[in-house]
Length: 371
Image 1 (cartoon, rainbow, N blue to C red):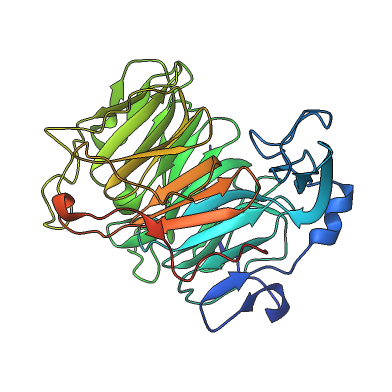
Image 2: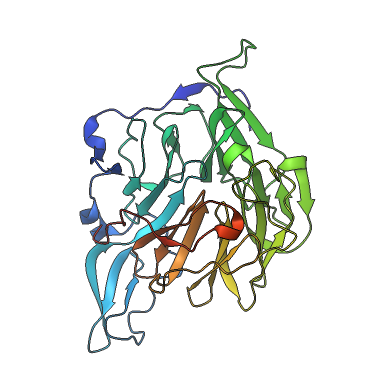
């Protein structure tokens, strides 16, 4: 990866590309009509299936085209025009959240400093302190308020970050490389390197991302874990990593969840204590995915149910009607997910002393179930 990328601010043209309500809801135009020709991206993981599969009346799922279908009284599946959610994105810094749908449209909840993303089909959009950042279906990173280098290779995923007061983004590229890109404007040192600082991490990854203050971690192709702080490696057979300021957990190939002592940010705040000496333990399983907020670790079990634990190992209850999930992402005090019926859901917890942290409750205002 060349470090000589030219910096370019990517700002959308035309107010028609983005609509905003007084409640801080940001959305792209509805493009459900396009779904007649398919979702234009990968099928929603764990959803859809054989149309002849027996079902229970009223049961809902998403088909391979990204549309919700419901089980009828005679045991068949009937498709609707409801476009299923593809992914959710939670900002680890400010706790805003976005839902991206199978047709590439998105909607975000939170304060946006302004600026629209270009009218594209997105696989993930994140609303950050500095504005919107999106990853298109063909792997291009676009930002409304962040300076990104020109000529980036196709990206597979990304997370926004802040480090040393600078804003930025950490992309995992399709070729397995991983980098931290920091926008240093408006306070750019006169060192000839330009307004964007690039830190490329050595080696290859099959999953990697960063969170608040530039903390990063990932899974190497051999299944070992990598942590940016001290550039540490943990041997093992892992498929997914989950971490926040004070927790570091991973999903094993056997479907277990293991948590480790974090070596960063411990004890520097009186709000949420570091994990330990007790750490979250997840019995049962197997689990399919894992994520973390600034206080809890959550995993999806084989049936799609959520199991959440506080950093100290105590149970972190979810609302009884939380539902079944295919995808989850946590950050700050928010946990969001995509349900098996294609709807999005978000929950929030208090961030106080760990021993006083309350259960997850639905966010207010609630996500629009009809979108």
